[in-house]
Image (cartoon, rainbow over the protein chains, first blue to last red):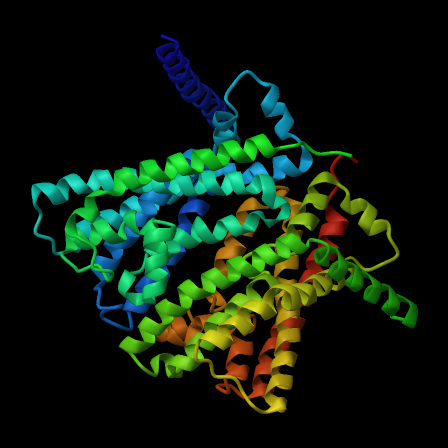
Length: 280
Length: 268
């Protein structure tokens, strides 16, 4: 009896959190739209900054025909998947990287006294619609890749596409959440998170065959970024994955994402409990 | 400029150095992040040069050296932003710059001194460790002659001047635009693309390569790298960098006098 009541309360909190997230994000969108020109310019800037990485890849392929044995359409496929997954996660929860500042100056206290889940408030804090620029850039490259890449499409491979995009976004959300949890203890060292968020998406833009095996192992078993695109995309493209994992591993992205989010959630809870505010 | 004001600017530079040296955890975090990005980039470059040895006239060891040099200089030369310009723009926007202009010091030299102090700290604090890490674990092409290292240091000083002069112009745009976000972003893009940070400029195809090598941003990373790697003679490189430094600093001075004459400080 009490168990089911407890579950009811928990579900209530999740619904409440999502609702609060929507309200706060909506407020920030309205505030952004007060300066439409500024919004258009910063969205374009976001798009252009992200596109720079792909320009580098295009410049590389202007001089060579393959990188690590992968052709331009295949690398573009990887790039598009990584870009869209990361872009969605960045849009949804990327604001969490500002948490370090709130911990340092003590303004996190304000969020703690409001009757709304802290995670929802932190995730929606200064919700930046301009990050659609990054998503758009990823979608464009993915679209280009899908037109030019040579794939024998099967039902399984088609099904895998939305699964890996959403699962990949889930994995990146977990990275952002873990990075935010780390900021409770990191103080000034918040830049470390960039190595895993922006560094992670940069790593996944290139074929796994380019990197040393130890790095690929680390990105598969320690910080399982490989499940965002390396593993599922290798399956779709019919390429062997360097670590020789079984074929079904390509379909485990949602499970890995769920496990990562659960672990990151625990880390977040531990971080929030350890928060002692600022001041003398 | 007398000895007294010379001492003043040295003190400002020392202050800039100490200010950044205060944040040790942030520095360590920066070292870690630069090393991770260096690792990712170095493997893509190794793959690129595996595919085409001698691409752009570099061998593989020179290409890996270029990667680690880029990570070492990224923060010091503020190629991707992060120098003094955000602060100066904020002072222009809020009107605090009026206080700066009342001081019996030169605005451009004041910020130059502070930025040189910051650059020196970030070169030593953030740049050296990733570079040493890269040199230990990857094949690199480092010169044995002390003279080449000395020439490289001269190119670094000139690179700092060019980098400052470019960012000073970016900051001054706030006198007219107030919100410098757009300009900062464009400067950031140009810096990453045209300095060689994205890809060595000698790898750029055809005419595009010629154009980017003539632009001031190539003074930042490409020029010091080519001197260190023995791909360019020091004297013409000095001349190229110094010309851009003088020209851009002079333009900065012109814009500064136009700005201070024409623009009414906010809240006045």
